[in-house]
Image (cartoon, rainbow, N blue to C red; front, side, top):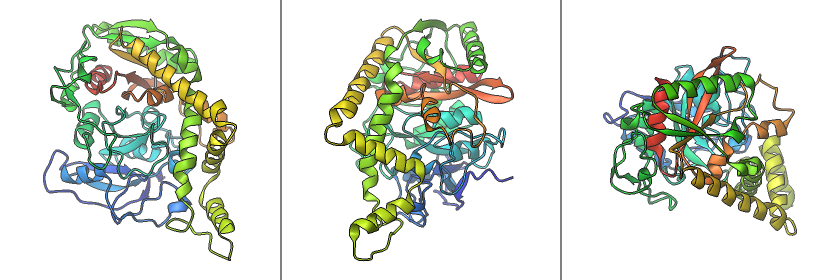
Length: 440
């Protein structure tokens, strides 16, 4: 049975040599590929072929990678299950009756099923880490500004990042080595250097400048002396089946020499609410460009432009996208901006402060990636609030613009459970090192 992991299957050959010369890569369908259809999983962009490559796609080609297709996704990245795609749901290769997670579910499913060696996804509130956890692979959400977003069709600019998905920590880190780095087309990117090696205790040092970064080389699995903080708020709401696997993984890290301590992040209680207000507000602004005139699904013209716009957007967008646009527009409207959007930004500052204070005492933070096992297909579609709350452990990282990795920690009931490791800003080497220890 087909997993429906790809919207478009088309080979794009890279250079003859390079770091990824022998690798095949699936690219999420919200990342622009010159002359190859890029739909964002939406009827609105069906048939659209970008006139340019995203920076990350250019870097894949330069590294010799072969792109094998555009991976299925929740429409415009809005979802946690890859069921809101106009092109149909993607199935989880571990259990085809269950979701692969979202919104980068096609990317994770392609890697888990062996249909691609590597994949690129985008992560606005957990959209790389969630499907990585549900499909039993590795996914990295980089620090905001580490990877160029030029050519990424925007959902929520201040939150999202492109990142790698792979079967192993080292392979994911090697892909990050290829796509990371400053880009003149994206003013939010910056040059990141490190002062010393990636082993335990150097988390804070990786924020500063020094020798060139080597993320793949950091996958040493040496956690002797590493201090791991476990936020109680991110464990208490998880299912017992998930917590049991998570705690076994922590015991294993302690046996390897790590110290595990409890920490508190009181602000994360409000993170999901703050995240969705900010994300939906930015989405309502970003998606205003899809009016059926310049590109995208057309509503035709019968003499009334307002009716034409309304028809194009009504037909072109799915229910979840419409819901988020409406809620975001409401949050930004006169009389409600201060009540919702402003308070959400204040909560975001509180989340950042809590993370900064936690990293004064620990090197990395650990939690279950997702608080539940992969749901069955169709289970979440009728309850959007349940779907939103499933992001409780991943959204705080995006609000704080920090790096995080999901690595397989084991299985429960035959289904994968992911462990999330969060690092300080530009502390990718430290979380890669710790994740390699979990993997080992």
